[in-house]
Length: 380
Image 1 (cartoon, one colour):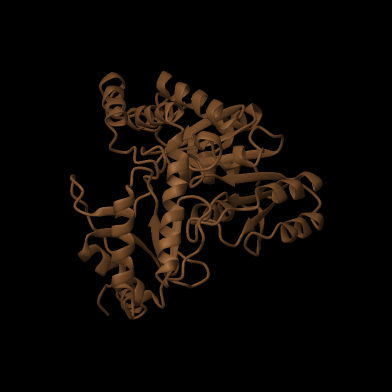
Image 2 (image 1 turned 135 degrees about the horizontal axis):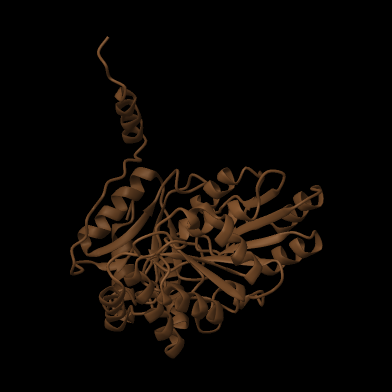
């Protein structure tokens, strides 16, 4: 028999093609050619000259890379400054910056649980949360989407350390979690609540301080938040925010912090620049929400099925995975970039176009985007 240890990959590729689930890389040019409704640049800051200038200044001063893990040579005064300002802005006692939001979720979930602990996870949570639950070695109970009563029921039946985890804004449909009710259930059952605020920071709360602040939970006992620096802040990286003793615990136990190279100084500088810009221009958060509402109103008025956005994500249903792919391609050909969500990215199996609102979109650009999405819709 010939030596062919990877022939199984060809079978997998054929199955993906038959199901309409092939994914390909599409490098984008340096200068945008399309109207962007696909990225997570909610505040329109990733190309802001103040932000790119802060990135360049940081690289010139601190070097191109972090040079090592945070506990060896990868921590700079810039990282510490970013952590202090993130914690202050979001209303938490302390913060810890990691190389990505994915790493932040893995750090929090693995370090705060472990064997013998219980994690209660929303069925709509992001893949990074799912993977964190798997790596934690804790017992994991997956509950129906946005159901605090189900969380309470599971916690009530458990005797021991427990943590509930939820996205603040779910990345598929753009709906917000019922954080107040979840926090109440956790308090009543002596459990911690971990909130992934990747899609809330910069959009929700006063001046974009995030979903925990909007719900009055920032800095509360038992509340820990994770976030990404790659969406509203237009940079790269992630962070965990919470009580100082929680952050100290992560420094000593979280493997994705201890064994990973620190965030590059340029990314830390860019995130800090964005954060300071948002402090000066808090209206950007409200504008992002206004744009999302306008997209939803105009799309549904045109007869399309969309989910009312709670933040900056607008989800438009497609009849099938293949139809969603064709629809997104037709939008691109007509001049706009939109997201295309298909299984396994969507836990309910329903394919969608995913439009992201940006604070810097004009009313004319919103109208153009809606016209193209409506005109290219399957069956239009």
